[in-house]
Image (cartoon, rainbow, N blue to C red):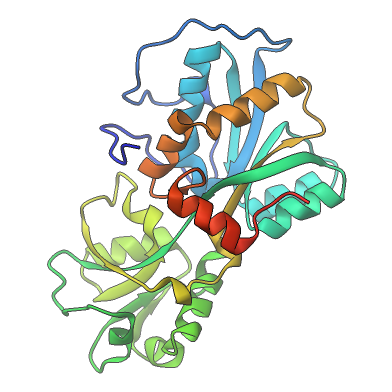
Length: 286
């Protein structure tokens, strides 16, 4: 799959919008709709971090089927809590496998499938002036670390677990010149050279406002905290047109649909690496 897309949709935090109103991405020409459904609108909720992928994917689905996607992207835990209560949607793509399992156990979700996975990297200002080459470098005297420990879960907490597993948490915190509450602000501070290094999800480096503005240094997977890595997608029992909801999920998990997630910096579930992670992390519907 081509990991490069010429145009992508700018992220909007806590986004609620219909895909038909999205800024147009560079997509193939419209196809004639061959599927016929009982409804022409589908409600889709996802955690906000997936918005860069869902926006153009939803636009493409509309072009192919004529169905409008009423899309809401927000904090996954808040959406999940609402869905476990009285709120309803038709398709839900959430972070953390446990949330999908809770929705299934509560008889709110008909089924779920693995959607994509995230990964963590070290980022430095362009040129890597501090010569960062390994996560152990966060412990070196004089290295200015930027972290966001107060970021909404799993942001700050996940990075803390990662640093602890790597055995560098205390030293990294001692070297932290900024301890913020927003992962995007962390990227801005780093780009402005207010620090030498940070730990972020790779997807942030693919956002249009940050792409090409930082250097990226890999982190060994053994340090990744498992729960935040997984994103799933499932059809809710409240789906008004089950056939339509199933068709949408099939599209998102097709090669064409998964390209949008790869372009946004995720590991597609259908890729070789994604299938390995599916098995390793046990991302299966009970």
